[in-house]
Image (cartoon, rainbow, N blue to C red; front, side, top):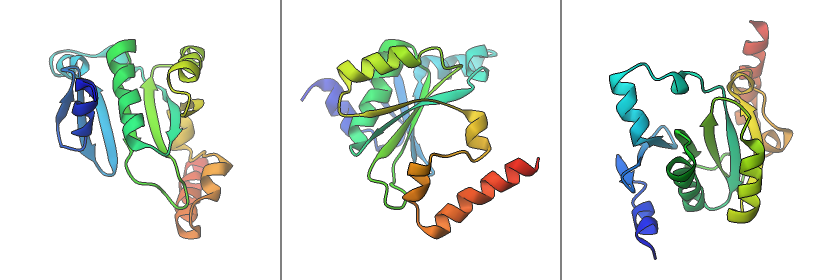
Length: 164
């Protein structure tokens, strides 16, 4: 086991730092991975690239530690700033989701290629805008795996956002 993987094992500890570059926090059922560099800049200046984030790239896997490792590697090696991973499965879903945030969808092909070569056991869904999430737009595959009560909550989000 590599030093990096040993550090990943501690990812559930509140406030863990991976390789000195990624802060991992656990809050409200999500593991939040944030670039330490970004955190420093957010404290000291107006951080334009953080405000420009308009969506996320989605990755799915039944293996939570794999998604934590991917999110950390993308931040450390490929200049992403933030990711989050749902730490609980919803309904009959058998896969966790990694949301890798970015300003636009310009890196979707780069990530698709890297996913094929570096993360072959992970399902990559490309880009989803924050606007789509706010409007309650979720895939039928995801919604079909939720229990009826949970599905109703997602439908309410969609109804309330379409009234605006």
